[in-house]
Length: 505
Image 1: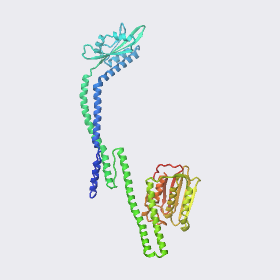
Image 2 (image 1 turned 45 degrees about the vertical axis):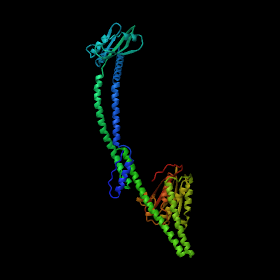
Image 3 (image 1 turned 60 degrees about the vertical axis):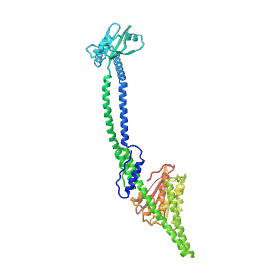
Image 4 (image 1 turned 30 degrees about the vertical axis):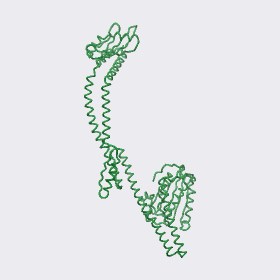
């Protein structure tokens, strides 16, 4: 279908819009939908008409004769089935009255039954009276066949023809009873001429009807597609506030729903990309400024003072570590999102990994008086997972609980042994997360826009990395939180790893 996109923007977008439409039109090589549907209808109509013409010219006469023969067979079968019954005479009357056939039953000496001249078969009566049946009787008596059907010209009737059916109806004590049925073959030449004129009109009407239908159907199908094309052009121009309307058919409605979903995801991705650039720029700027400032201080002030120089160098090292952590987190997150970071699946005891993770925060327990607990329910906590990435999950989630903890400084890791999976909870009594923010906490740099107090700094990518690890492991995950009471981050890992992509929660 040739696209004809018409947008109504003004200002600086107008030129971009025209360029976009021109590029789209230049890439379209197919003919419009209306033209294609018109061609299909015309071809379909012509094929149907050709079939009708061929059937009429070549096969109508043959088809008519075959139907006539079949009618003879059916009549003969009915006579043979009822021959000898008391109702035979009335049945024969009904058969002769309902058709123009002439029926005769005789033996070598006597005519046992014949259609009377009062019935509609007068012409066939005259033909039957002159027809010599001796040859047919001879063939039947010699046993060459059970029945015979022949076609003969009718006497004094021009080119009129008739079919004669002959068979042995009964044979008793050496006396053979014969059945003869005479049926006229109507000349179809005049009928063919009438049908030919009729088919000419049918052909013309069919082509006209096909043309009208093709236009209506093409417009009906093209309307939602044109609407979707216009909306897609608006989306391509950078305007994400667009709605795709594909009402008309189930396929276009499904396409519109898919495009609306794509628009939502593209809009979200664009926003995240802008936020990422802004936050990365901010996170890079601060430590770089610190590094430069303290390096200048060492050069100008504390270069000869070992104590101050050591302090300033530690600041530079810490800021460099912060930069290094940010770059590493960005690299890791990008690799996992691109699915180029393969998992090394093995049997992992989550209880051991959780204990190691808690021990790694011993400094917070000793210096900041954090209460960290590992509680379990059940005995078997072995799952199939990548132990390195699961360690990072525990480290990030426990670290997140530490940063957002409240005055009681409580962090709990709770493992539950289920039949086919292990459920893990990381619980804190911190500030909690508002309901409207629950769906956003897994996004990059969610924390950077929130004014939370924290005891340690993070890159803002921790939960995004955790989310990608869960997806790679096909894990079920989520968070339950109440503002002012704390949060519970949970995830479930199967004992037998299923490598299909997990559904995001």
